[in-house]
Image (cartoon, rainbow, N blue to C red; front, side, top):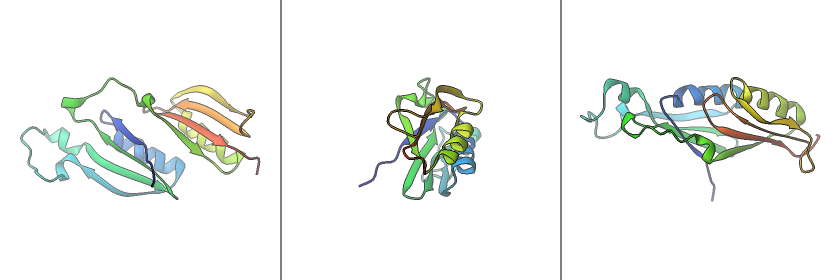
Length: 140
């Protein structure tokens, strides 16, 4: 059994996942737009809606994160902060690199630092409104 966070965006899914792949690594094995879904042409979809992401997935080793854009009729004012994605990294240098990338143009909630439970731990909301925790449990 595996769990994967599913993030919803209001038109920024493609941009967010390209950013995550660039800075976190991994592969995007599939992306499907609303225009590519079964049942197209859907009279409820505009040309802009058809370009939005209906589903995508980024895999990094055994970890997967998925996402989509909300269609304009289902836009949400609720931030993705309802869920926080915790990203475990193998060493302090990687923690610094990942935290810097995820907090760039976002908001640092807790600076990356040593804690009683981790060699490095920090929290940030990225530029897409997603809350992240970066956790490095060992100094190695």
